Image 1 (cartoon, rainbow, N blue to C red):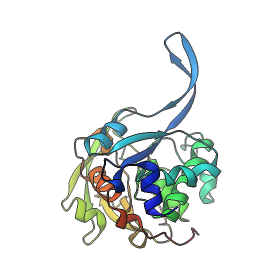
Image 2: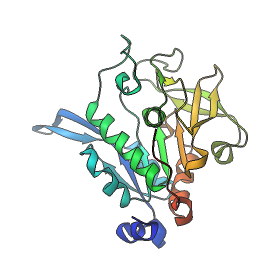
Image 3: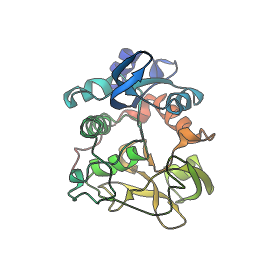
Image 4: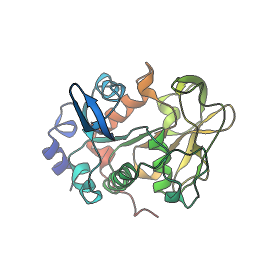
Length: 254
C-alpha cells in the first residue's frame, strides 16, 4: 500500500490529524476482571499515555496471525513494539540460559511479523526494551541473555545515564547524556544487519540502536513510558506525521 493509500485508510497523520500509533501488547491467560477470570490483551497504561502526551493516537495491537501484520501496518502511521518478556533464544540461534524467562511465542511471532512489515513499508518504528531486542533479532542480530546492574530490584524501575553517539538519529533527538528509567537483564550482543549503536550505558551496554538506511527506525533499551521525557516518542510521532519520512521501503530482511 502506498503512503497516500495508508493515510486514506487511517485518516490520521498524513491527512493532517493526529497520527495513529500502534503499540503491541501482552496476551495473558486467566486474568481476574471483577467477577470474571478471562484471557486478556494487556498493556501498561504508560505506553498509550506517552503516545498521547507526544501528540499521537494510541491503538493496541494484541497478538494476531503473522499473516495479518502487513494489513495492520498499512493502517498505521507509526509502530511501537513494547517491552515485555525475554525473546525466545531459539529465535537467534541460542540455547536458553537458566536465567532467561519462559518464552512468549505468540508475541515473538506477531511482533517479528510487525517489525518485518513496518521495515518493508518504511513505517516509522520504535522498539522499547524487548522491542529493541526483537528489532535486533529480526535483522539477524543476537542477544546477551543476562547482564548485571540494569535491574535495581525485582519489580523496581531504576535509573542510569545513557550517552548518545554523535551524528546518530538518537543524538539529534536527545543530544546530551540523560538519566533514563531502566529495567532489563538482557541486552544486544551482535548487531543486526543495517543497525548501528546510537547510545551506550557507562558499562558499554548498547542502549539504543537505529537503522540509518531504513528511514525512522529506533530502538531504546530503557522504558520512556516510565518517565517524564517525551522526546523519543515525540520524534516518532513527528516522523509519523510526515508522509515523506515513510515513503521509501527497505530491502528484504536477512
